[in-house]
Amino acid sequence: MRGWGEPYRASLELGLRQLARRRHLREAIVRLAVPMDPSRYLEIPWALRRLGAARGERVLDLASPKLFCVALARRGIRVTSVDQLSEEIEKWQGIARDEPNFELRVGDGRALPFADESFDHATSISVLEHVGGERGDEEALRELARCVRPGGRLALTLPHAPVAWAEDRSTSAYVDEGERDEEGRVFFQRWYDDEALDRLVGAIDSVELVERDVVRLSPNLNTAYVRTFPLLVPLGPFYGLLARERRGDDGDVVRLILARR
Figure 1 (cartoon, rainbow, N blue to C red):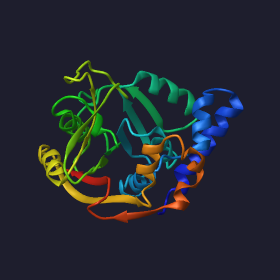
Figure 2 (tube, rainbow, N blue to C red):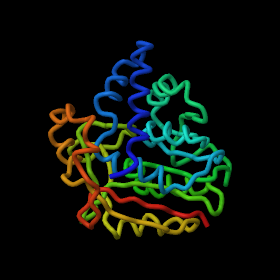
Figure 3 (tube, rainbow, N blue to C red):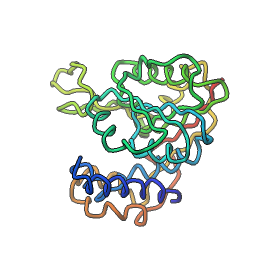
Figure 4 (spheres, rainbow, N blue to C red):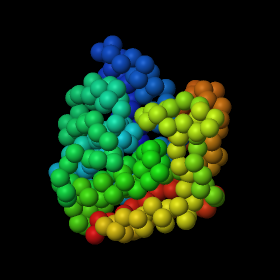
C-alpha cells in the first residue's frame, strides 16, 4: 500500500496536540494508538489520490472520517464536511480548530443545505451504506451530485459482499431513527454486490461511473480487527506495514469514482 503516511502523520499530530492541551483526551489516545482503522488504509489514501481536487477548489464531504478531511484540507483544498451527528461535529470543531480550509456543519445527507453546483467535488468514505430509509443511499448520493458542478468528481467507498444484504444490530451505532424489526434490532448498514452497486449508481441520472475497483487487505486485518476488537488495538500503529492491498471480487471494500454530467 502507498500514500498512507500523510493521513497517518496527521492523526499523530492531532493526537499530540490534544494531549498537550489536555483536551479531548480519549480521542487523542485513539489518534495515537490506532492512527487509522485497517479499512481506512484502503480508503483514505485512495480518495486523496483519485479525487483529483486542486488547491483552492471546494470539496463537499458527507460524514467521512474527519482525519481524511483534515488531510485534504492541508493540501490547500477547501473542505466542508457535513455530519448528522452533532456531537461528532462539536468534538472535531475542537480537535481541528487550528486546521485551515476545514469547515464542519451539522446536516442530513438526504437534504443538504447547499445550492446546486456550489462545490467542485464531493466525497463520502464508508457512509452511504449507513443512511437510513429504504432508498437512503440513493437520496444522499443524489444530493451530493446536485451540489457538485458539471465535470466534478465524487469519490465514494462502500462495503462489498458476494451477495447484497442489510446488516442490523441490537443498538444504534449512529443516528437512531426509531425503526426496529420484529426482533427489536435497528438498521446498521447495507452490503453491496455488483447488482446493488449498479442500482445505486444507475438511479442518479446526473453522474456516470468512471472507476470501480474491489479491494481488501491481505492478510485481512479489517475482518480480524472487527471480530476480535479490542485485541488487535496494540497493533494499531503497524497496520500499514503488516498488510498489502489486494484487488479481486472477494474484496470487502468497493471504491467508486463518479463524474458529474
